[in-house]
Length: 76
Image 1 (cartoon, helix red, strand yellow):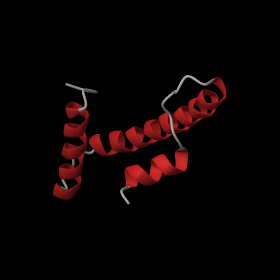
Image 2 (cartoon, helix red, strand yellow; image 1 turned 135 degrees about the horizontal axis):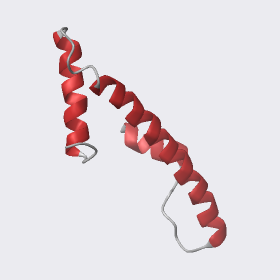
Image 3 (spheres, rainbow, N blue to C red; image 1 turned 90 degrees about the vertical axis):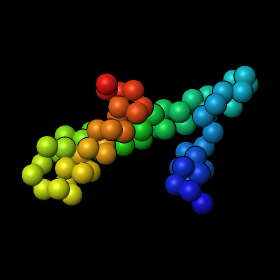
């Protein structure tokens, strides 16, 4: 099982289906998922800020995180 699948299973469905009671549950799941993504992006941002480190392994991780942000359109 992939991490993505495990998280989806833990959080639950997030896409609305047009039924009020079910969509209310899914809306709460969406809020949980968005909070998780916010925390993950914060973690990645911390690593991205390390890109100028004199330590090569730290710099490599920082560059990867920074490139990730560029790929997803958060920074250019």
